[in-house]
Amino acid sequence: DFLDKENIEENFDRNESKEKVERCLKQLPLIYTEPLSLYYIEEKSYEEISDILRIPMGTVATRINRAKILMKKICQKI
Image (tube, rainbow, N blue to C red; front, top):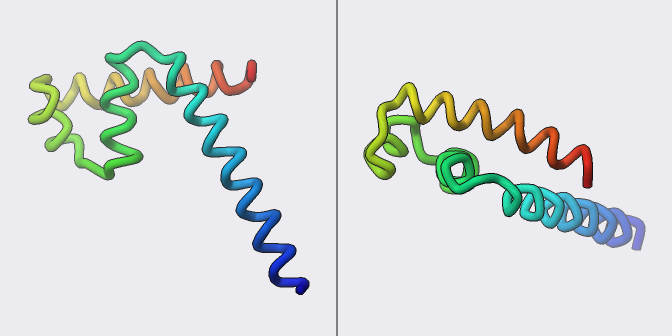
């Protein structure tokens, strides 16, 4: 029973965090959401993202870094 209770709480916390991240992502402009999602959710490399979005790898890196900064600001407000 003890392990089950821990798993339930852990799953609840994980789901709550996931929902918060999704709400924050929805508030980002598309130019930041795409590379961020491709990198962290789909686990693509910068090179793959560059090919998919047809932008230079330096731009991919810049957009991901800017997206992380924006995400932090947005998520702190929620």
